[in-house]
Length: 212
Image 1 (cartoon, rainbow, N blue to C red):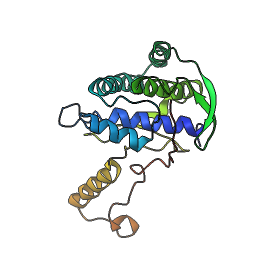
Image 2 (image 1 turned 30 degrees about the horizontal axis):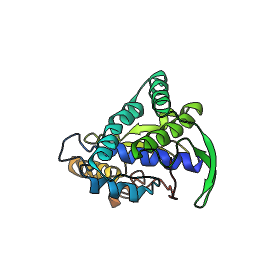
Image 3 (image 1 turned 90 degrees about the vertical axis):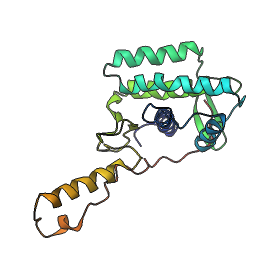
Image 4 (image 1 turned 90 degrees about the horizontal axis):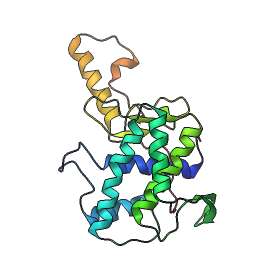
């Protein structure tokens, strides 16, 4: 494990939230309705107060470009400024808590805070660990040419290159077809066709109930 479990889970959910932006078009956006948000919250097991209205949806949608700026920043000073802004804007006060099967971990907002605030602070707290560990290079953008999804590389050898949308296998298939089209291939294991890359599968993160 690269980071504490709650940090890895928060990074994964933050990446998933950013990726709901899709290709940046309205059609590609997968967080357009309150029902979409309900499904996202359920999938990532956020707890705490909810209003289930358009204002809550809008606030969460507005958080996505902020997190993407952090994820894709090339200067750690930019990351730090954005993270500090999220924490100070929410008046975050870290507290050690233990609940719902989770051992001691940090919360920095109360369950009564708005959903978007809790999401923002949880992401910011996880990013604090990333910055302090000097591991910002683990926040990446999928290397597939036609994909802009973000990912967090939690592999031991820092080898993950593709998002969880199937890009790794898709790139492998395309490379295999290109080799076939280029001419005869040598016999042996390499001629058996594209092999799963493993980089587009899930990151091995198990999820437990938590709130920011």
